[in-house]
Amino acid sequence: MDKDALILVAEDDDGHFALIERSMLRAGVSNRIVRFRDGQAILDFLEEAKSPDSPYCCRALLLLLDIRMPKLDGLEVLKHIKADETLRRIPVLILTTTDDRRAVMECQRLGCCMYVVKPIEYQKFMETVQKICEFLSTLEVPALCNCP
Image (cartoon, rainbow, N blue to C red; front, side):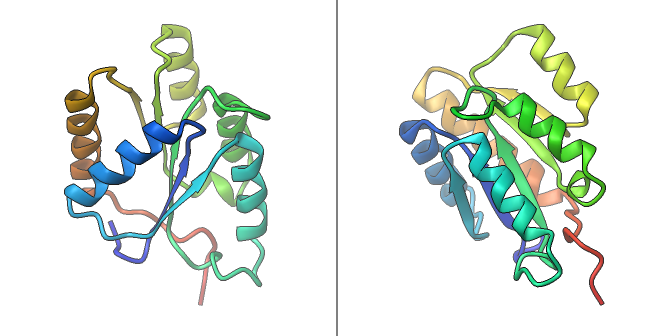
């Protein structure tokens, strides 16, 4: 993954976000990480980001998305992103406590590139995020918009 890629994390739980951030740092991820506490906040950011005047329009964006969030849940966020001609380019990794098979299948149908259930145990949670980081290191992330 490009070192200039911006990692967006939609996570309302402070403890989970701290573990994600800490695990990424331990895995050597040096990309900027931006947190959003609810689904509406991430959609608002993305709508602004796709404007040609936005400093994020020419940046590669990657989204780690929780399903259970206030205001707008992750499934609705994913539906919106994958229905939008510009936003659908963003790789979306679902990282959630939801292990419902229907949710997994729906996210895959909508186009998430990975669905990971957060382990409850601290050490396993850290290991899971570190494995995600290994995957991210090989992922080619396109810029949000076609830039000159």
